[in-house]
Length: 335
Ligand code: GLN
Image (cartoon, rainbow, N blue to C red; front, side):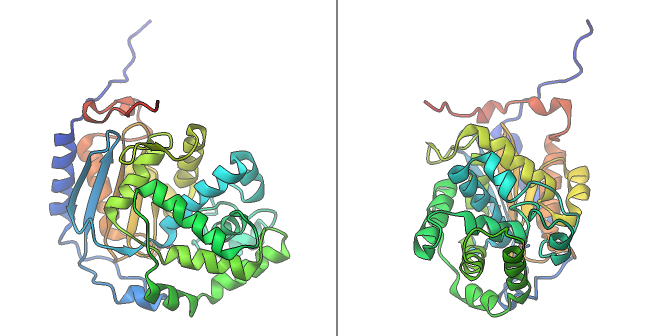
């Protein structure tokens, strides 16, 4: 038998810190992209804000730039609520009720729903995210459902998020496309609570504030089989973690997901607030934030920064050598 070519990389916290700082300096002056403008509040956010955070699986958080600046979580909120639906219903039921497929179409595509009306495709596109909000228990009780959504995010990040009221008002006043999606789901029997109630929960969760640091902890919790390395609590069952990462892998960047994976080698989820969360299972969670977006709604600088860090560390989820365990970040025991 020949020896395996797979090598085990050993990466220290110092290596990660150097890569994060280098990426920040490299990308800081990039000027491409534009703030989202279809939600008026987002157009007014300072486009120069830029932060990066990496949370290692020993709970160490390495940050640079505006990593504690609060911004609108937007579609990154689809990840925690998918987790919540899985916690409440199990992975099999969520697959049956919502789906786990890529759409190849924009995040708010009605066409995607028309083409696959038996299921909203994935909890990480608008249709599936609204369906996931409809599933959250207790069905029919908006206040209790909202509490469950916020509590779940609090467990995943370790910090209780607040609604950015101006963003919520701005988004609620302009969400005509999403309203159409909610009612089409009703027509197809694919929404599991009142459509307007479900849409409002979705809009509110998109309007929650977050930071790059908080998202890196959420990403690390997914990378760490549901065990939050900062709060040291098991948030969700380990068997759900690969399912969550598979959803992120399939459709995290919508119609640009394939390009993103091909170029970066890390499953990641974006939001039109400018946040991106990336998951390297068994290694770390990463997040970057910068408001200007490309045409698919993904932060330009966040993409460049995460790609730079992955490249500098020599990591790729699809490479044999990815099976390394950071010396610095071996997962804490779960007992
Ligand atoms: N709230 C936004 C919407 O539904 C979220 C979109 C996104 O971040 N991609 O349009």
